[in-house]
Length: 261
Ligand SMILES: CC(C)N1CCN(Cc2ccc(Cn3ccc4ccc(-c5n[nH]c(N)c5C#N)cc43)cc2)CC1
Image (cartoon, rainbow, N blue to C red):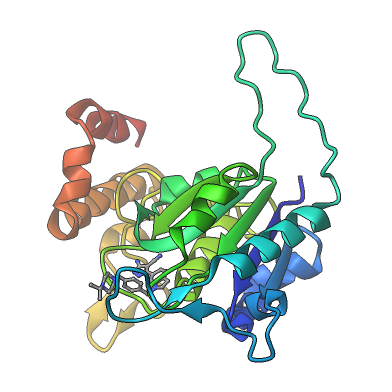
C-alpha cells in the first residue's frame, strides 16, 4: 500500500519541513505520497478571502465553508479511484469503509497518541485540514461526513494558532511507522509509548565524559542483564515523569513485561 496524504492549508509553506529528512526521502522513494495544497486556490474573489465574522458575535474570524468544500471535493476527484468499490467483507468481518479519513486538527479534538499514529499508518488516504483563525465553519465537518470519515484531533492540551504544527507532528509520527521509512524497524519496537512505557536512557562513546561514566551494566556484554536494567529504567522513568501511564498499565501487564526480559 502506498499511503496518500493530502494537506490543505492557507500556509502551505509551513509544511515544507516535511520535504526534509526521512519523510522527504520516503516521498522521493515512493513509499508515500504527500501533497500540500493552498486553500486560497479554491476562493473566487480577488482578495482570495477564506474568513469572515462569526455569527453570534465574539472575537476573531471563522473560516468560510465554501473554499473548504471546493478543496475537499478537488481532493476526492484527484484520488482517481472514485469508482473503487469496496471488496465485500469476509465472513464475519466488518464492511471496509473506503472513504478517506479527514483529520481536522482542533483544540476540541480527541488527543493524538501513539495509538492514533498506529491507526493512521493503516490508512490508504488521509486528508488533513489545517484550520486557522477561530476555526472552520462547523457545517463543513457535517457536510464532509457524507464523503469522509471525519476525525477532529488535538495535539495536546495547549493552544496553537492553527492546525499546521499539529499536522507536521501527526504526519511525522504516522509516516515513520510505514514499512521502509525508518532504516532499522527494530528501533520502532523499544520506543517511548510503543509499549506503554517511556523509553530508557541512551549512551554512546566516550565511556566517561566530563567525569560522568556510562552505567557499568551497559559495558557488561550480558544482554539479559542489560535488557533487565533497561526495563527497570523505563519503569522508574515512567513512574517519575508520567505516573498516569503506569496507572494505565495493570499489574499483570507490568509483570508480563518483567517476565519477557
Ligand atoms: C472565547 C473565544 C475568544 N475563544 C477563542 C479561542 N477558542 C479556542 C481556539 C484556540 C485557538 C484556535 C486557533 N486554531 C485554528 C485552527 C486550529 C487547529 C488546531 C489548533 C490547536 N490548538 N491546540 C491544539 N492542540 C491544536 C491542535 N491540533 C488551534 C487552531 C482556534 C480556537 C475558544 C474560544
